[in-house]
Length: 157
Image (cartoon, rainbow, N blue to C red; front, side, top):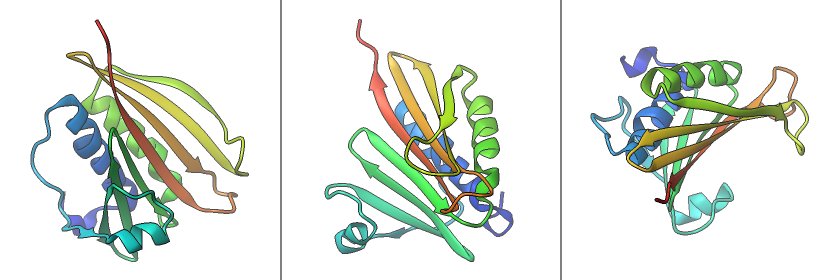
């Protein structure tokens, strides 16, 4: 898919599925259709990220999508644009790429009005798992954002 025809929700889903989750599964292939900009530590600090990680900004007019990696965690987010389509786009992409995707919960955010939180567990086999937590704003939310946190896990035994 060409970057010009890609929406923010599609790029975010691609970064989660073909980037963060594929990395945990051990099968990353190809590259993203948009050249990212690497943020400096000062820029990372300005957006309240802890030291030690790497943050990429994928410009997609009129704004873009962020991808942050720090240890076993990755985070993908964007604001405005098609934030209401983020969940359905990501859900479909994860289930298509990883059929063992299991939804764990879906509830209102305890801290933010108009935001829901949904979590998933993905078992890749080979003792590798991922916990995916999605914060998605509803149309009447104060802050119009879509955010995904991915945490790599290992099964013992």
